[in-house]
Structure formats: C-alpha cells, structure tokens
Image 1 (cartoon, one colour):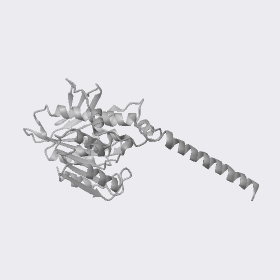
Image 2 (cartoon, helix red, strand yellow):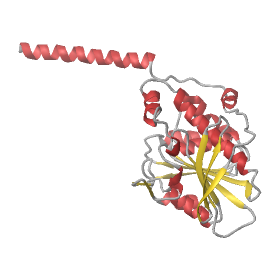
Image 3 (cartoon, rainbow, N blue to C red):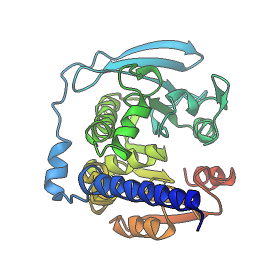
Image 4 (cartoon, helix red, strand yellow):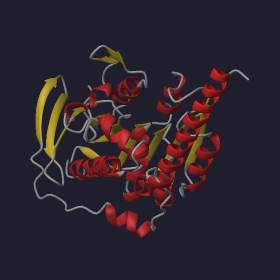
Amino acid sequence: MNKKLTQTIKVCAIAGLALCSVILFWYAFIALKVQPLPQGEILDSYAFPAPENIEMTLTEIGERDFSFSYKSFDGAVVNGQISYPSIEQETYPVLIGISAMGRGYQRWWTDAYKGRPTVTRVNEIGRSATEKGYVVIAIDARYHGTRKDPNKPLSSIMNNLHFFGDKSDYEAMIRNTVLDYRVLIDWIRTQKELNENNLNLVGYSMGAQVALLIGGLDAQIKRIFAVVPPYLDDKTAAVAPKNLAPLIVDPEVLLITASDDEYASQEENKSLYSAIASKKKEHLTFTGSHILPGNYVDSLVDRL
C-alpha cells in the first residue's frame, strides 16, 4: 500500500477515534439526562406570589385597540395588546393568543412584522375571533419581542440547552412566561366586561406548550387550542406538557398536530393526547410539517 495513503488512513482513524471520544464525553458528562419529577414538585415550581397591584396601563392605538403593560409576579414588565370587537357587548368571551418561539405578540394582528411574514397564520385566528365577538389578548413571552435581552438572546438560551446541557434558562423562560399569563388571567377575571367563564387559550408551537401548562394549572380555562406543541420528555420535566396533561380535566381541548413534525413524532403526539385527562378533547392531524397548511385555521376557528 502506498506510504502516503497509509499515513492518511492512520490520520483519519485517529481523527475518527478522537471525534468518537468527544461525542462519548459529551453524552456522558454534558448532554441533558432524563430526570423525572414528581407531579407535586412540578406544581410547586409554578407557585407564585400574587401581586397586589400589577400597575396595568392601557394606551389606545386604534379604534377599540389598546397596547398595554403590567408588572408580573416578580416585577418584570410585560407588554401586549388587547382588541375589542366592533360591536359592543355587555360581556365578551376572551381569546388569549400565545405565540410561537421567536415571535412577538403583534403576530396575532398582522400578516407580516418587520418584513417577515406571519407563517403560522395566527393573525387569521385573531381576526376571525374578533369577528365572532371575542376580545383578543396577547403578550410577549420572556426574552421575546419587546422583552428581548441583549445579554441573554434566545439563541444562547437554546444553545445552552441543546449543546451544553444547561436547561436552567430555558425552563425559567417557559415557567415565567406561564406565570406572566397567569397574572394576566387574574387581571382579566377582575374586569366585569370580560367573561371569566369563557376564557380560551390558543397557542402555536411553544405557545401550545405554554397553553397546555396553563391548562394543567388552571381548571377554570374553558378551552385550549394547542397547535403543534413540541414534545418534551423528562430531560425538561418541569416544562413538559405531558406531565401536567393529566390535570387538564375540565377544559375542552383541541390538539392540532402535523404528520411530519420535526419537533414531535406522530407517536409522541398520540401519547400527549392520551395523557390529557379531559373527556372533551379532539385530535386533528394535518399533512405537513411544523408550519401547517393554511386550512388548519378554518378547523380551529369553526370550533370557537
């Protein structure tokens, strides 16, 4: 065999062995491991001190449209928007829109934002809900939209989770976003024109994850529309919807999934659906990937 070729083979073999060693080291000492948590411990992690005054401030930005801000349980400022139907009513059903990862609250009202299209089409859901007489409300998740932190970009949170086995920032982001919504829901229940018995959550992707977690914590939610939630196992047990799904007993639930979703297999979607305790549940699967075809909107809106 040619001496140069022999040397090349040796170098490749050494490089391959080194790469395997690095991968084994990463898997053994860095990668996230499955760590189940008792349900009671998960519930305890979502306990929060109810603020006495959230200092809700509303600013009119259009006819019956308002931007708002309030202080959450930990003093963090939350920003969002609330829109009322054109026809005045004594009380209004409420649709709370919960955005996908990386998306701001504005997506529930516009088909494009900062030159980027709203590919999830949640703006169509928001528009249809308003036409049906719903008040539509959405806020920014932690580290999203108006709440971005240059010292902790979303990319670094996800890189720490996937590559460095550090889930602390990711779990805190999801948990605190859930609690921001719970503070908002507490405020909604104090508003006499908003029907506290007709609260509906609609979430896409990460938003669906958040909606299901809220549903497991709040039995008084009327309906949950969970669109392509990512499937999380017990590597991030505290924020995995499957762990609180058995507590979703009273709300109606519509789970919408994709046949070829890169974030949840069909078997994982079936497992999540089975875990949801409500007897008033339905599972629709659309052909496609994580960005669903537009007709999913019609199926959802028909059930409002």
